[in-house]
Image 1 (cartoon, rainbow, N blue to C red):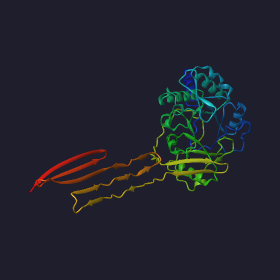
Image 2 (cartoon, rainbow, N blue to C red):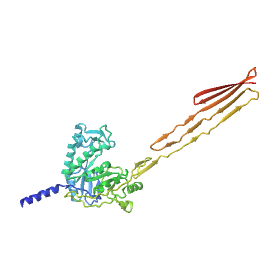
Image 3 (cartoon, rainbow, N blue to C red):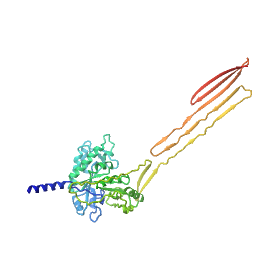
Image 4 (cartoon, rainbow, N blue to C red):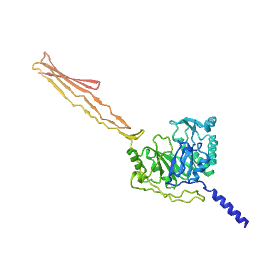
Length: 427
């Protein structure tokens, strides 16, 4: 009997450790507040179910309070860059080869995650997240391989290896792993990560790419930047998210400062009747304590259009976002010169000399110049010059014989040839 009880205790312990971490499901309401002090974030009487905040800014007490109010907490940190302003990152500079090129838009530097020394910094952050009580981790900048131009840039295989390692480390600490942006890796990581985070999928026509996560019953948290009063912006949002209403979408200020204020996007409210062709059932937001359940996958084939002659520019102002499309106009010009033949015959009644001159025209053609936004082809004009000059000289000799000298001069381009024929005729 004691052996049986011991067996049950052991079994329960094993089952409790299998995927005991949180696995968010599609449709959860969320907010992203990295730009607001966590002490100023409202917790009670709020509609969001999930909040994404900075790991170093939050405290254990605040997370406990959020949990008591039914909130799940995602903790953010950069797993791919050295952040100059963070004291916690300074030790990275002492690791040879770890800190590499500067990011274009931020005061951060890309890390070479192939350097073994990076792991201690990442596990230190994950240990802190676990201690504070974070439910999930937002790993930022896990797409180095598409953003650097190093001679020895990481390969996609090396990127996947690092990303999978991060997810495993989070799972080992009973926290969900979140994958950020890089759509190129979604298919490879849909069974590794537990949720995804995307920015501006409407701008890059990539909302549909996240169907691989939705079909796997995994949450996709999306942030769009604009104003709901901007009809152009909202038209694009409705077009790009149509059929993918399982996406958890919020609309934030165009400044991208990620302050607390946000608009919870509802397709029917902002776009009209629902047309969810890829709807995923929203299941309860509970901690999983059993082994993974096999899920039937539904694959949606999407045809994407690519336009090479359209340049799209988005200009953000304080109150509206203006989208200007510029199309290159193709101008076709044809210049055709008229062929002219000038023939002159000079005849002298008593003259012994007859001259016949013929000038063949110069034909100049300017071929169409066709210009598009991506390819320019110019065919140069072709010139052809040719002329033929004929003359006959008649000489009468004293012995009543006449000599006829026929001279033909031909000129083609820059080459001249002369042909002379002599004929003698006597009475």
